[in-house]
Image (cartoon, rainbow, N blue to C red; front, side, top):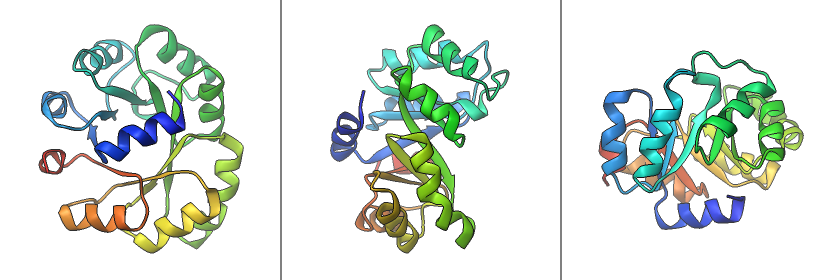
Length: 189
C-alpha cells in the first residue's frame, strides 16, 4: 500500500482508530474507521492482534516502538513483515521507517511537536526516512500542522489530545489528511 492508496482510504473516512489495549480492539473493529493503529502488544501476541484487524477488513499499522519484545533494529521490521499481515508500521525512528519502506511496508513517522527546535528539525527527520505519512503529536495545533506540511510536503495525520468533534474539524480544516485517536466515541462520529 502506497501513499496515494492510503490517502484515498483516509479521504473516505479520516478517523483512524488508535488502540492501546485489547479491551478497545473490538470497538475499533466495529467502527467505521478503515485504518487501525495498534499501540500495544507483545512479540508473542501481535500476530493474533493484526489477524483480528485484517479479518475485519481493515488496514493494520503496528507501532513497533510500543510492541513489547521488539527492538529498535531492522529485525523488528523483518519480524512484523514475515509473521504478521500488517500493512504498515508506525515509529519515531527514521532508520526503521526507511528500512520498512524498502521491505514494502507502508510507513507512518510519529513526530512530537514539543518545541520550536522539534518543529525546525521535522524537515530533516522526514527527509532521512522517506515516510508515507507523518503523525504529528499533539494534533490539536492547526498552525503547527500547517508548518509541518509546508516543511515536508508529506501528508499529515493529527494525533494526540484529539478530544472532540471540534478538534477533528480543526485538524482536518488545517489540512491534515486524517486524525488518529484512542477516544472511542470519536471512532463513531
